[in-house]
Amino acid sequence: MAFYFLSVHPTYMGTILNIPIKENGILSSGPFIAQAFTGFFACWLAFWLTRSRSMKINTLRKGANTLSCFIFTIGTIGVYLSGCDTMWNEICLFIATASVGFGFAGCLITAVDMSPTYCGVLMGFASTLASFSGFAIPLTVGALTKYEQTLDQWGKMFLITAAVGAGSGIVFLTLGSTDIQPWDPCSSKDVNMNSSEKPQEKALPIELVNA
Image 1 (cartoon, rainbow, N blue to C red):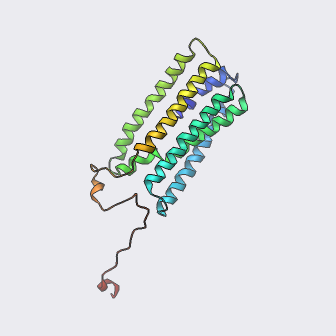
Image 2 (cartoon, helix red, strand yellow):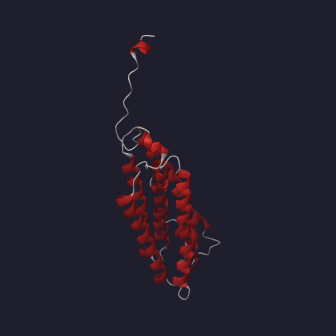
Image 3 (cartoon, rainbow, N blue to C red):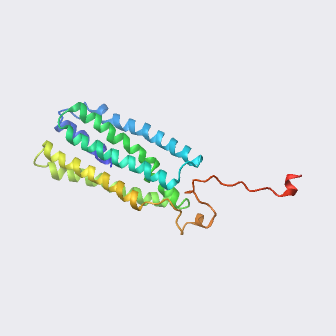
């Protein structure tokens, strides 16, 4: 989702908001600094909730990802509705980009939950597929604005981006799972990471207690 703001939004700021690319560096990079802080906080909170067994991992991952996707969608629509208002554009840009940080505690780490053994391979496949959006977004923007560098044409791109954000959130919310897959060697172990109950301590044999 953030590939849009990373790859082509500086061009939007230069052509529509009349802020040259050479001068909008801070405005373009600031939201990603906010995203780093959001991601750190989300991961810390997720770690604490996991260690304290306060929430099932499946609920935690879906909750974090839902926040990420739908706040991103709202922020992107806000950029669309802001028109040429630079201040509101930047505020909505901060909201949309920073919210992606919640995804670090959501779908981005689900591969570790599904398959601790093969999570590296899963992340490799997922990252490869996700990287295609880095090619698709500039091509789409180019097709929409090749002959018309207008707010209406850029608005179509904002709506497409918002729809993708909302759609991905709905898909993960309804179909996502953190259950360890049967093809992972860890599935044979007596481990239930999705349980919110604290594990029971096993009693030591009487001989060891009296030793």
